[in-house]
Image (tube, rainbow, N blue to C red; front, side, top):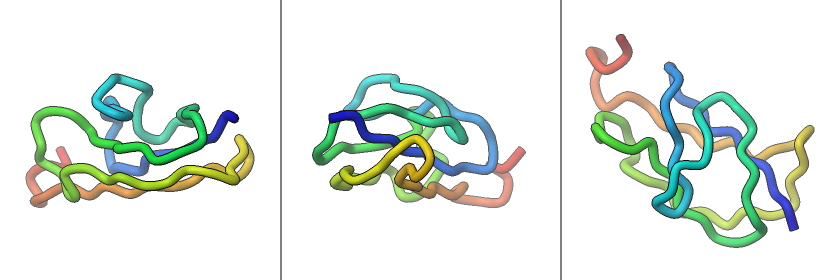
Length: 77
C-alpha cells in the first residue's frame, strides 16, 4: 500500500529512503507501508544522521512528518 511522508529541513535537500534517492525535503514522498530509513545524504551536517521509522496509516492529506535539523548554525546558509 502507498504511504506518504514529508521530511522537514530548513533548506531543500535530497532525501534518501533506504539508501536510494527518493525526493526532496518539504515535498510529498511516496513509500510502501513498512519500516524505512530516511536520511539527507552527504554531507552529514544535520541531525539525526538518519531516522528509521515504521510508516503506515498515512495519506497525501495526512502524511507522516519527519524532522531533521542542521548540526550547527552555519549549516543553515
